[in-house]
Length: 119
Image (tube, rainbow, N blue to C red; front, side, top):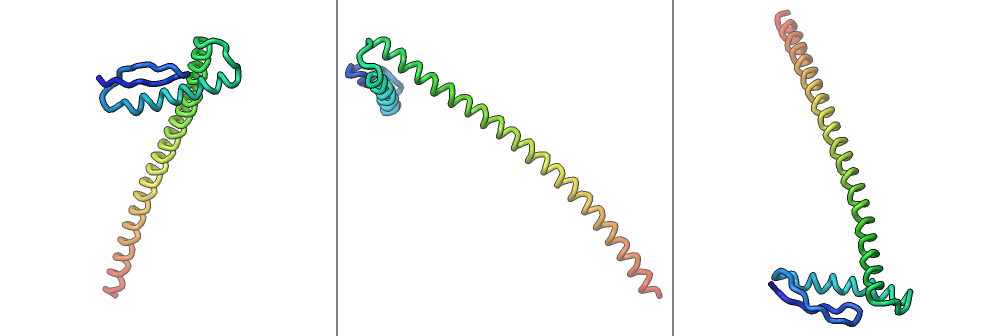
């Protein structure tokens, strides 16, 4: 396990993470620290715990909005896939019908050509 030290609201926290995830954890902590800083600017010193809870709720709100967007996009993808599959099915049926018509037409042409060559 790797160890990193992150700083949130001017306080250092030593944390463990998987090998190779150090930079990611540091970036997450920096983002969270920006939430805390934003709240401190907006509300002043209202207590570390309260600021941290408010920042956590802001992060959860952002995550909930992103999940809603993701579910909407997943639904849109499913609709597009169904539309594509329906279009491919119709195209396949149209191709089969066209092929059958062309075969019939070719047979008629051969029949006419045979009749003409006998005449």
